Length: 388
Image (cartoon, rainbow, N blue to C red; front, top):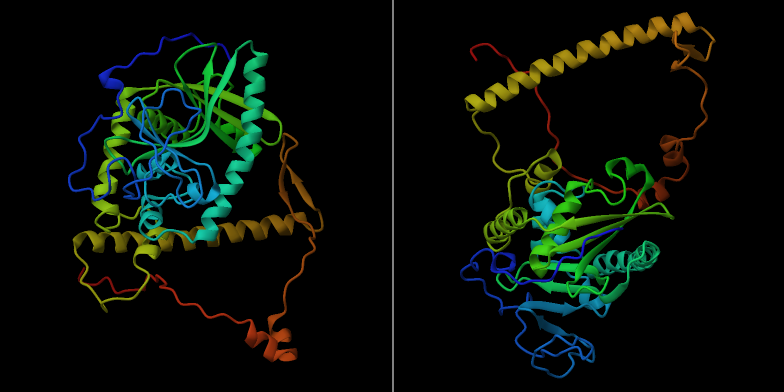
């Protein structure tokens, strides 16, 4: 990866303090857990200018102020797995509704009703194991491209000085070619089937939710450069340089601060964006009925029409399938004029559980392993449209 050397500089517009502090935030400044003491330094960090204190519970829990940025040392899984107390880089895409894994409602639930201790530890440990592999491959790639690489940090959590509920866990931190400026590195493992969503190595063509994560990290740390290293499968590594965009960073900070203030601190969920969200937010029955206002009436009428259209199209499809099967007879494939297979009708083998026979033969066993469920089921009724 060929990169220009950019001199390190500190400028007010590049500071993490792009927005005013949220009024009334209850936690101790610089610490997301409200802890009041036991601040200590890392003797390996030559730039640290901090007070020192005794270890916490026998563990080295460092909190270091570097150029006005608060850093938590993630020395153990126990220290690093609980993400409920802050908005991290992977959370920002969810705030924006861009995450492929969680909606704003999912994120709100994670922050207000955190996952169990065991779940958090498993996820955190799995990520750390893979990161070391990707990091080693990236360093080898950079050195092969003629760069000198100085590793200055791994798995550090930085917290925003202004918004103490914002943090960034930086997987890897390096200095390239003798520069004083530190480059953030995000390490990812990607399924080969997802490769089409990424551009060539050294390009800026990366999924938008990862762009948001990298920009968030640059905003919290106040740095200018990052590399996103993605390992596809087991052996294809691609590296994507990312330069800080101050307008994007500020927009992310504003959205993150609004989400935390309006939803996490208040306990009020964000608006649902899909059907699954509605099941999570409104899982219990409430009032028996409500009158349909003009908008709701329009939605219900459109749903009724669409359902009728779907049934008609399904009937048409079934009729065409019948004609095709009759024409095929015992033939297994139909080829289009260009030679491509358009339809297949052939035997397949499988198995299924005969529940009726099992219940008759082993009723006690079936009863022991039968689980009940209850959930709200949405049903569009065949209502009378007269007078609507």
